[in-house]
Each structure stands twice: as C-alpha cells, then as structure tokens.
Length: 202
Image (cartoon, rainbow, N blue to C red; front, side):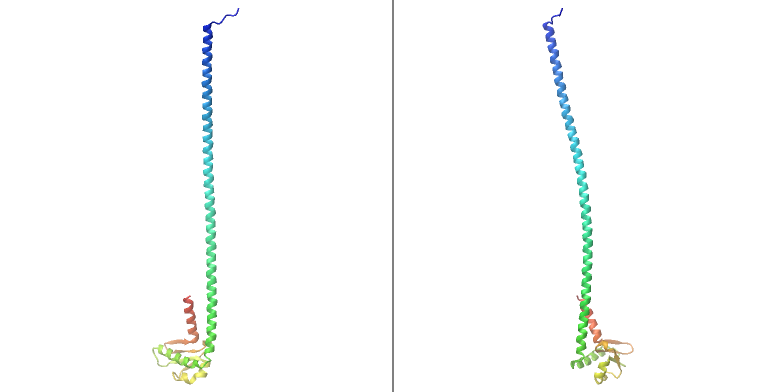
C-alpha cells in the first residue's frame, strides 16, 4: 500500500527543491563569472604577448633602419670623399696645364720680343738693374746669350769687359756675378718667377 505524502512533507520537498535550484543558480553564476575572468585573463595575456612582440619587432626595425642609415651615410661620405679628391686632382691637373700653357705662351712672346729693336733698351736696363743689386761691383762678369753677345757686344762691353755666354734657352736678359754674388736677371728666370707667382695666387 502506497503511503500518502503529507502536506508538510510536500512543503519540505519544495523547500529542498528551491534550495537546490538556488544552489544550482549560484554555481552557474560562479561558473560564468570564473569563465569570464578566465577569458579576460587569457585576453590580457595574449594582448601582453602581442605588445611584447610589437616592441621586439619595432626595436628590430629601428636597429635595421639605423644600420641601413649608417651604411648609407658611410657610403655617401666615402663617395663624397672620392668625388672631392677627384675634383681636387682635376683642378690641380687643369692648373698644371694652364701653367704650362701660360709659360709656353710667354716664352714664345719673349722669344719674339728679343728680335725687336726695343729689346736693345730692355737689355741695357736689364744689365743696369742686375748691377745695382750686386754689393761688390769690382770684377763683375756679365753673362748673356750667344745671340745677344753677337748683336749687342758694344753695348754690353760698356758695363764690363768680362763677358761670358749663356745658353740660348735663357732667351735673353743677363746674369751679373762676381766671386761671391750672382744675380740671375735672365728672361727665363723672370718668366719662371712670374708663373710661380701666378700659381700661388690662384
């Protein structure tokens, strides 16, 4: 025979059921909260790892950029130095060519000048100028080119009977000397001095 459940017992069962339901709800709520906390923790960890990777990547990228820049700067400076040296050498070469051209042109002009009538007065003044630079004027020797000695012997002899000859490469002018002094007043020497003076003023 089935025993009939009393009303009191029914109420007790309901209370137990309600408590079990409440416990179940609480457990579900706690489980959901734990799940959310776990998700947040995982997300935070992932985000931290991503940030760390980004920082590492950025540092590597900056290092590569720095190395590339330093390499480019080094190559630029090397090329600049090379270009500067090449330019300087070209300028030096051009100056040498210009100096040689100037020297040759002046030589040709002076070679033509010594053939003119005006050269006679030039030679006279040239000898006087050289003599004036000599301190001891005794036993002076005047040196002139072979051509000038042949053309102007009488004029040269007015300043000294001691006459010696120079190579015609001296072009003209004279050298006046004694036993202790020598004054080179040749056209060739004057040309060299003028060209060197021009070169130093460039």
